Image 1 (tube, rainbow, N blue to C red):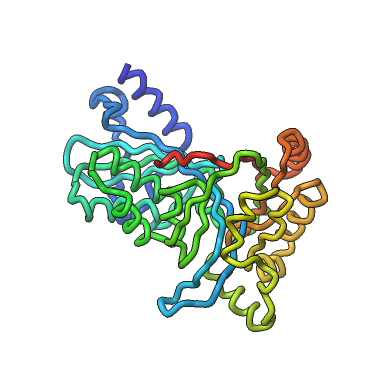
Image 2: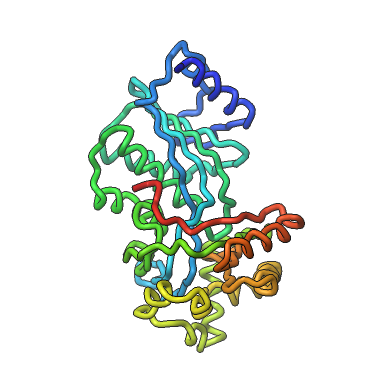
Length: 336
């Protein structure tokens, strides 16, 4: 059985054109021996995880803090669009290999940082092989890099029975990025601070969504600079947004009430990239009860209270947009 599984993995890896990209990690050519059964795969040494992305149902950017970060008030929601991660533990000390299909990872990336932090914290030196199948677009405000890092931390903790508790993993996640801690917890949360303060919410399962990426890459640093500049020219920006104490109640209420939510990034980023505003307008015209840009952009989601209506609108949009996905709000996190 292990030999058959090994051959199947080789077929997938070769056909997808997997590539190791991070110079901080070991970059030797892929060792096909372990997958051809000469070095058998043990399922006890392998773990697979879905790494779901998130949308920001609401995102208010507050002032810049003394540490250089901005405080936020946000509702994070995991959705059913996921990257797929396979972690394999070697039987001897070694480096870490990262293989990624169809995606050019930067030299230092969230996955490599997660592996480094885990190894430094636990002292584990066994070789690690990571296969990352990217489905979440980059620069889309969906937290793709953050969820990958969280999945690697959670997966390695299980794979090596390292015994790191929730607080330990949270601390490691904070060292990688502001959004990473969220992906280790509840699929819906009120998020404050720089992103590390999380209040779990009872997840909604009665909402259906469409996600469209307009093909525009919006960088996080660029977006925060745009918000700061926008506030200077628009002193009343954000005045109509609900207070922090109202957010959980709005989330639990009627979907129509979600129109009270908003995103501080939307006005400045949509002014810079009109294609994003056009997508939002199209979703509202198609019948979405709430449509907004996620995070710092550039993806836009539209939400519906009826599954058939969502499917009808998706069918219409998917015929003329390649980067269009249906999604559900997750009721459970695959990392917990």
